[in-house]
Length: 486
Image (cartoon, rainbow, N blue to C red; front, top):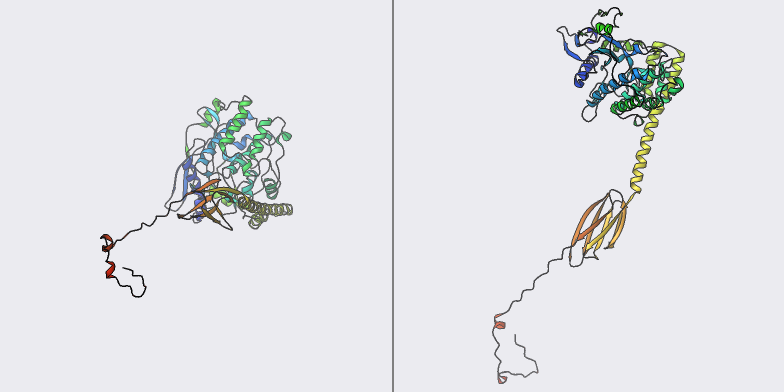
């Protein structure tokens, strides 16, 4: 990394983010980072394996489709590499032909190495981002950018965003053209956010219908309508290849290609000075790899991608906020560099569309939430209330409702409502219970009898011994009263 960037923590973090992401994944189809460190004079560097090959972009000539028998084995490897990354909760976010290298490996050519995880999004076990990208920050290359990236909706970026980017590459390989070429940044944004891609078979009638369907599914605007994982996309591509009798095996490299590949080497990538291109006779020198720090610097000089996109491995780092405000800010930044009235109009349209899309998504989410709440409120659940013995008086109460009746009886209450039941019956103990009305059910109470009081008879001593009758002569009755003996 150039020393002038060493004091910028965000750039330093992004520089090492690639090494961190790659080391976490550890897949044969992903470029290996061998070491990373900081020198005594505060120069940051990492050492990566040396790749002697070419970028996939070199295989993709303008207006010249790449047949499926050549493209298929390459695409399957890309799917496998990215599936490994996604398994580790790492999203590439800048997938494009320049970030897919083809090398000779074990005598086979077109062995894939996916490179440049410098802007990869790492997430924790709960799917939360652990990177430094701010909400609304767009990072990637416009020609291959997913709608959620183009709109600055960084919280929505996931594995399906990489699937969309790979779909753009597949479209370009099948037709020789980009799905949304555009003559300006604004037009590219409009395409990704709003327009359907031209039907593939109208551009290249030789593309099999089944393969066209696979590509178009990758390019759906809504993430839920795309393939949900790289495994699904991998299997779909493989299914088309098997249907057409196309082998997934890589082609053999000829003697010259094997000789040009040479042995296994490594090179450092400090980005601190000029690099000597590695030459392989009779082929020209490989293009120099642009360090991550240089990519950040070159963002200010972004030019719209021509047909085909330039071969320099540079990504676009443009800040776009969620909604129109930050989107407009990012577009103005580009317009300051391009200073073209046509681009300004297209950028304004793109900003307006991006803001409308975010607002429409928010309104739709609120509408669905309200409908779900109303549906749940209107949905009723029947409860059958019984007791042992029958005939108990029950008071059922819940939010905004109540009913009193003698068992047995039925009531209907809103679904998932908490209902309180109080049972009472003469000569039985009171009983109460709470029930969550999530499903139709029977509410039954077995009442316990009240304990009865036991009467205790107490006898006096006189009652215990027989009383002796008094002689009649002893009693005197002079006032007609009736004598009572106590």
